[in-house]
Length: 277
Length: 90
Image 1 (tube, rainbow over the protein chains, first blue to last red):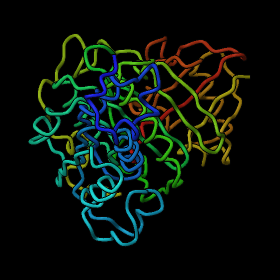
Image 2: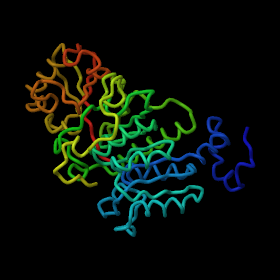
Image 3: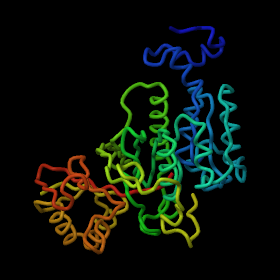
Image 4: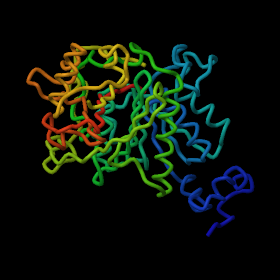
């Protein structure tokens, strides 16, 4: 039952539209207020995800990003403003979230997530949202989440299309089951090279936030074992099945990758500069 | 004729079309037919050994052909084929 003593008067009012939902209620809202979610990348996907999670009162939101705000980010990275140019993205996020909801603590991880620090960064969080912008980070985060048994909400975008799936290690496929290997460098251009419709990451990032909240609340059906594809030009959603690969090198029956590797090398990027936003 | 959904990165081969039709009773035949019409697309889907590239998934009615019969997976006119490459933008 809903225990009013769990909340202040203001919180009861702030979260009232959640509290009156039978699927959430006071109990669910308390779960959200106690949840710890890590968002990798405070960019196109991260910004919309973070602001809705903050509005929902997620207790602790970790944000991993080493970049500062650039003018070219503002077409889609909606938490940053013209006044934030050259400011650390994690700081820009913290200011906006604090203005929205002081129940939320933002943890700034002003660093690149690497094989050396990934397990340490993710271990304190309940759910990880991948809003990164490059293949090495995506494979790194996947493997780290499999090793630490953390749910991972994967989202990625390209031009007018987006992909989302929810990875529950030990209970469904992982990113390597879906895409065993990354494309060679240069085969698939980055957003910087190919462009992206500004509103696209809004759709995908908010779906990622929805999945994270459903996981915390333990309600509904997650995108586990299935991937949602969105095509903004056709204005169409499509779903495909994602089976678990028994031969997956990370989560299969006989894993060959049992610790974090060199992901730049894995993605053929060892000698090249990493792609930027 | 089978409907094939073409992802954004490959639409430069299909004159911008997001959906095209192809002939063939297997995925392999379908890809060859597509390549006759849209030269170069096969090379983006298959590697030098003729295998589906590991960052490209081909689905028949939402099922990944890697978990069916691969390139020999049967298709007919009522099936819907979807090509999905790995993308990393965020």
